[in-house]
Amino acid sequence: MKNKRHRIIREIVENENIETQLQLTQELKKYGFDVTQATISRDIKELGLIKVVSGENTFRYSLPTAVMMNNIDRSRRMFRDNVLKVNVSESIVLVKTLPGMAQAVAACLDSMNWPSLLGSVAGDDTIFALAGSRQKAQEVLKKLQDYVE
View 1 (cartoon, rainbow, N blue to C red):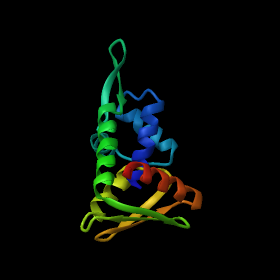
View 2: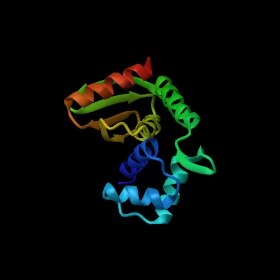
View 3: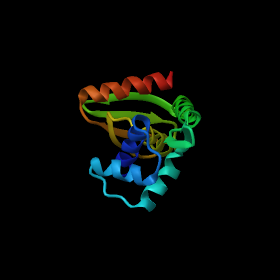
View 4: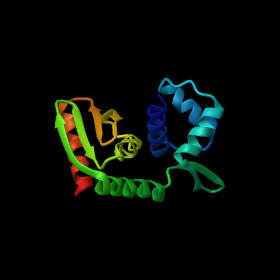
């Protein structure tokens, strides 16, 4: 639920001029989320949202571009340095990692919030990632292969 809410918050902030936590709360209600101000405050902190100038004496929430780029760079390094092989079967993507690295790679994969990916389970050196369909599994496979190269 939290990952879905965070994804929706990112979409709202990218597409709407949100100036206050109250506005964000009201927008989330349109998507079926009944959240408190305390939850919104935590979400803003966890997502690293910042306030940027949107006009004379007005500010709005925004995603920090540098942070997004750092997360992408970090993910690419994580995959490049620790993933040995990526394969797919039906809607399951299999990721083989160096011993002891599967949980870290899976956490990184989950944090990317790819809509094609429903979730993952990690052992010591193996990750099973579930995609929404065969086609989406192929999309995830292609992205991961690009990251590993």
